[in-house]
Length: 214
Length: 214
Image (spheres, rainbow over the protein chains, first blue to last red):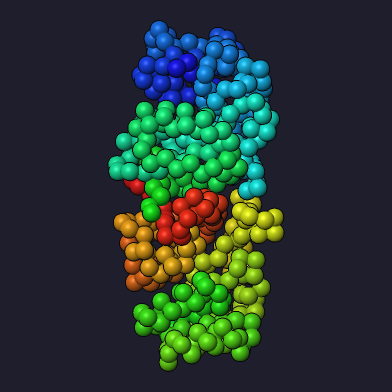
């Protein structure tokens, strides 16, 4: 598949490299066409790896990953352009983390809204699927880093989009997927960040995840 | 031990009955000294079961359980009286659920505060331990209802109080306890309610819990 990645940070690079390893064509988008990190990644990642602006990454892709900081997400999607996003599946990996009041971060959405919903409202033509935002990026693309079975949640308004993303997640190694329903359920998965951050502090590693035992 | 229970609802009755079964002396407190539900419970539960006002339940107890609705918690503790609460361990099982906007409920605290902290701030002489609020009350007192190992979080400012509560939780059957730290960590465990409520909807049962896989 042709996949576009928004964001050149550790999350974006980790997902982009995994997708390359799985045989996909991946374009890493950033604010400028000649971002050094994106160019270095594409150069290292081989012939299937491209880089360009957010609009470039969006225009050619079938599936998009939003790997930006939560605060930047709407601006980045605006830069990508609603026309380039229209009809595309957007995997929203971002979280509404607010570091302005120190550590641990709080969330900049209340519990009657979510960043996933804000993105869906701002870009109604995009098929947003919220997932992967509840684990460290290394676990996102290699769930076997955490021993045994554990759970990945997903939600979104478009059943076909969720199905396509589920298939992709299975190729990452995910087995226990729980579809929570429509995009309003992003409130619940984004609200897992406070416990995730504290567990990271207690466990001193990002190699953990939640399992819904039932 | 002598244990006081605030609340005559399903949560309070379930915990009170479990404590009686474990051989403790339990007093169920309510707004009035002659609450019908409390009297019926005490009558059924035997010689070790008492009932009375919130103040009665608090005065004689070593450990207290707050099993009220979140919205009522501070008022109930006020009725119990700061002097009766002073120095006691208070196990806060309540959640800041706001049903006023319909289902699913939202939380009436922002993610930079928690009900556990509000209680600790309002009653600084009480040793608040936040725990059990992340599972159905039947699972609280019988974790084996959910197969395999799964996790119970606790947090609070007083190490001795957390130790006493941990021992009590072990007698309920809990094995995987994670101490998150001080009472501010109640923000994280209360924020698990949105996913709990949605999982309950998806799984059609309250017999589930989260396991921190690591």
